[in-house]
Length: 308
Image (cartoon, rainbow, N blue to C red; front, side, top):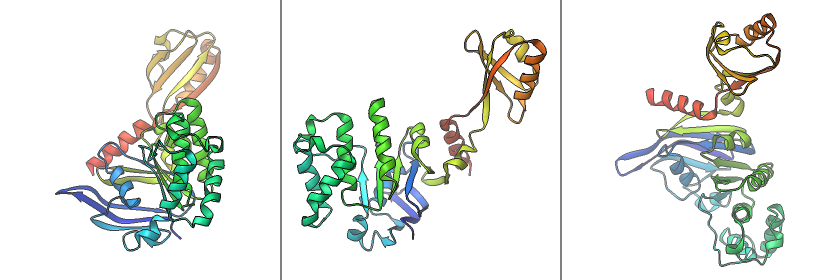
C-alpha cells in the first residue's frame, strides 16, 4: 500500500504553471528528502500534499485516501511542520499541544495520553507549564515537531526542520527526526545538502516544476564522482614534480606536508602517485579520494533538466 502517491500533479497560478506532471510514490517508512531551488515548485508541491492548496490537475493519495475526494480523512494521516513554526507563544506547552490535538479531532478521552506521549518523545515534559515564548529555539522546534505527530500520522511533512539551530540542537533534532521515521514516513525539505545526505534514505529533486531525480541516496552518490585526492607526504616534492604526472590537472599545497591533487576523470591517478612517491622517496603516509559535493550534483541535474 502506498503511504503517499502523487500522480500527474500540476498546478498553475494565473497563466503560469508552477509544477507539471509531478509523480511521486512512497511505499515505506523512513526519511525522503525533497530538494528544489527557489521557484522550482517544491513549496507548491508540499502545500498540495498537505492539503493547504488545491491542485489544478492530478491526484494526491495518503494511505490510498484521495486528498481531494475525502480531505478530512486524508488530513488525519498527515502531520505538517512548516518552516515558520505554527506556535501560539502565549500558551504553555501543555495548552498548545492540547489545542493541536483538538484541531486533529482526537477523541477527548485520548488527548491527555497523546500529549504526554509526544512530550516524552520530544523530551519536553519538563517544560509542560512553561510559556512557549520563554523556550529556546531548539525547544520551540521540538514543540513544533510534537504538534505534527500528536495524532500519529502516517506521513509527516517537514519544511527546513533544523533551520537556525546551533550545532548541539541540530544533532538532537536530527536524532528525533530519525526516531519519528522509524514507524512513519517523513518527507523532509531542506536547502542544506548535507542535511539531506545525513538524514535521508531517498531523494526527490524538483526543478522547473518537474521531477528531475527520484531515487535512493546510494544512487545519488553515484553522481559524486571523485574529482580530487588528498596526500600526506613526509618528504614532499615541489609542485612542478607533481604537476607533470599524467592525468594531474592542478596541485594545491594545503600545508607543508599535505597536498590536494586534482585530476581528469577516468584516470587511475592514485596508482601513479604511489609509484612516483616510492620512486622519488616522497614517503607517502596517507592518500584519500575526495568526492564532489552535493551542490555540484544538484547543479548538474538542474542543467540537464533545463536542456531537456
